[in-house]
Length: 392
Image (cartoon, rainbow, N blue to C red; front, side, top):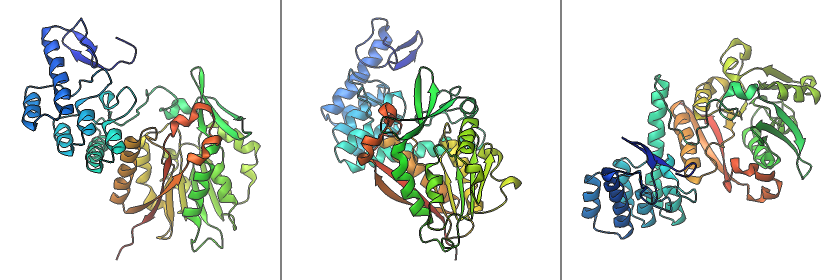
């Protein structure tokens, strides 16, 4: 087996899950893989649905992938058959696991999207949303939710807050003389915040601040996660600077950077050192705000969802607005869409209505720093703006 090749666990251990039948397969396993191959062939040849159903009833494996990494779900999307897509999902086809990606990194949803097959795409996306909602419900009740897309190893600085806070961050400039913040991860450095995000941050400040009744006297602003200070600088550059500007930041290297640049001395700015989990909802932060924004690093969707629960109490009035950096799953169109809808569903459940604005970031290409573009490879950034739902 090659490194990172998908596998299936059999009685004899792990075997390749795609491509040619491995010589180590026994007779029963060869039959199972042959059924998987026959299922993909039947779908691609658009055989009668009865033939496909027969293969499914014979337990043709939906985990099997051919030499190109295509599963039965990929095949159904490629022939634009939303009915069959639905059947395969009901039978257990997975939308977000190792089997979800072909050799080119595409999900079945990506294929449907490329063919403008909206019905098939929506069917796959909605299955993903339902799956994630169930996982989130289990997590909220003390169960395990180990199915979220792009889940990193829990002992790395990329996904563990504690590991991240003990890691070293380096502030430097890129080839365009723009300041960037880098995290050392193994032998490479990963961008924590990059200059290409400036357009997103500026638009976010406009969307959550412009037109607010308190804008002429100074807004009360809360930001969680300082990074390079891009969005906080835009808050300070409002025609009337915030009357209250609270920044929550836990990383010691970031706090040192803030102190060196005079943020501790700025009028109206209060810096609360620590994790938001230890500050929000406590007497340390005993006030409400006109504008709330959060952009943390090394946290997953479950952490964001927990922050959502605090948002209604953080917003001072129906005129108050809330936003967050919408970057989860943003290296794949399907995953990004699922996370965006998931956030919308959860916020709606606590009385926050979201409006979306698509921001084209393709023109920012020249500003992206080397290969760190990978953490956000979508052309469009979906900018969320939330408000408390009006009650009668």
